[in-house]
Image 1 (cartoon, rainbow, N blue to C red):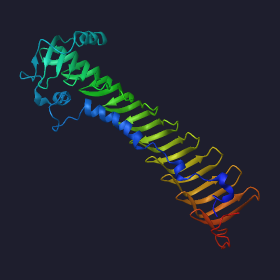
Image 2 (image 1 turned 90 degrees about the vertical axis):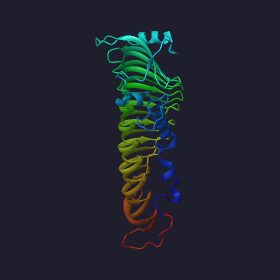
Image 3 (image 1 turned 180 degrees about the vertical axis):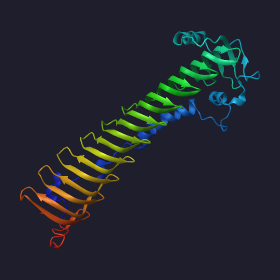
Length: 354
């Protein structure tokens, strides 16, 4: 029979269920996707012609030269009264020092066709928002901070009606540079951004204490990083497009450890698996299963060295007995020994090994 014999239950190899990894589970992946989607769809919606002219459309509006914001037919009108309060303007001036680009600015209040309002500094020659200003949409989304050449650029803060907000660097109406995004539901990202997506080094945390700290690219975990799950399990190593991919270490909360190669969130390639009771497997994996050649050592000195398929001994192999201090060659089929010798049929083939 195979190593998982009736008198070796203490040395039982974990089943697939024991070693499955849940970093790709819908709960975890949806958490990061949800934070990103809220940020992009509610605050920085994609600039395309499918968008309605609504209260979120500032970024669409400002991004299109055909709107002619800087010309004589600018789509706004000057107003005397605004829903933006004096207190908000005073806080703006306290938090954001004047720009030092020597452009002469005036203070102005504007109303746009979508009924969003702007109060702040303005370049009267080029007819552009420039300097410190506040934009208020009809749904109470609000941005306060720096503007340059009629675009949100520099340091600022954008607050969504739900209470979610981003505070940090902007460039040309996009989040670019270092900044913090906080969701009222518990998610938080602190780090680098590029074109409204996490890009560079940053840390994302969830309310359940799950967190990822490492490198990002195009809004995805990509590069070196550490992912800690709510139960204390963690992976540290290489990521590619939100997946564990490359080389890395995974430690479960029950102290099982795998160190080796990964593909698409699965143990795949050469690796080592360590159990708390002292068992050690060194060899090849394919999609989370032992496949190919590998060696399994037990705490009592017993060793199986040979081939595996789908997590079970399969093909030629040999067992070392610490009591007899000898190696025995055999042939296995789906975890059961069918021969002691490749050239000799065993009368007890297929039975549990005594």
